[in-house]
Image (cartoon, rainbow, N blue to C red; front, side, top):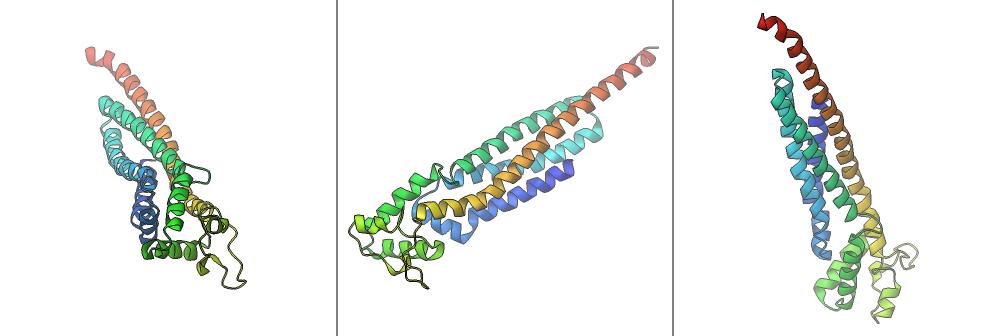
Length: 220
């Protein structure tokens, strides 16, 4: 189980690092000023490093059969469980549909549309709307309400019709599809923490019983 914990910890570390430094993610986070998306990722990166260290400590504690070290190991498992659960909750709270990330994306999109006459804002809107296949914050009506011309990237290249969905919805679905995997790995790791902690306490109990059975003979 400790080997599995190391493997799952490595997987979580790798996926967290990829989501943090993947160029497209970085670009969108910067464009839309949604740096809150990184909070959960940072938590899970730190936790995954801790998990790998705990797994090595657990191996040493089990081999030595040292009760105090095993109790420390159980405590670390509990602490890592809390960190994992918190990281998963935070990343889901800032990356899923109808989560705290949506008002942030919406605010940034409205700001970009209102400043679309500037080259930088126009470029950012073009990149997002072309890549995701969306239009405005909540739909093409955002442009008409703000008396802005509907850009060509808001239209389907085949039919010529404007994209029905806004970028807030589309980006939320896009982020949810990817962060869901990371949250799933974190939850699997939480389950492993519980199992390993219970097994460690069982080992402590077995060692104590063995010591109690040997102690009368030692006294003689």
